[in-house]
Structure formats: C-alpha cells, structure tokens
Image (cartoon, rainbow, N blue to C red):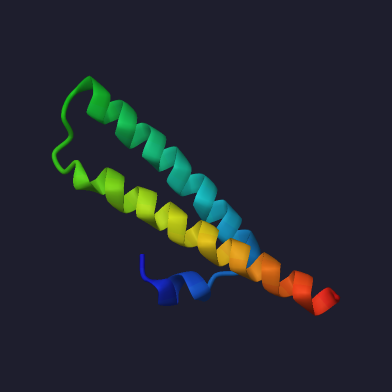
Length: 69
C-alpha cells in the first residue's frame, strides 16, 4: 500500500483498514505457525502497512487537536 493511497482515505476508512489488516496479520501468523507459507515476507509487508496506517491516523489526530486549540 502506497502512502498516496493512505492519505486519500478518510479517518473512518483508516480505522477500518487497520482492523482488517490486523486480522489478516493474525491469519498469516497462524498459517505460518502451522506450516510454512509460500511467501513469509507478506507478514513483514502487512506489519509495515499497519504501521503506515497508524502513523497517518496519529498524524490526523494531532492535526485536529492543534486546530481545536
């Protein structure tokens, strides 16, 4: 997921996407524990996507907090 895609999402969409990616990460980890998945780098990619989404969400919350002051 590119940063340009992330910045185009609304705050509600960010929260929903974070929840979906977190669920996907749990499924990938479980599948990898049972038997090796074909591409284990997908786990790293999903973790980084979650981090990017959380960063954008935190940035927007900080911006809205400074606007209300």
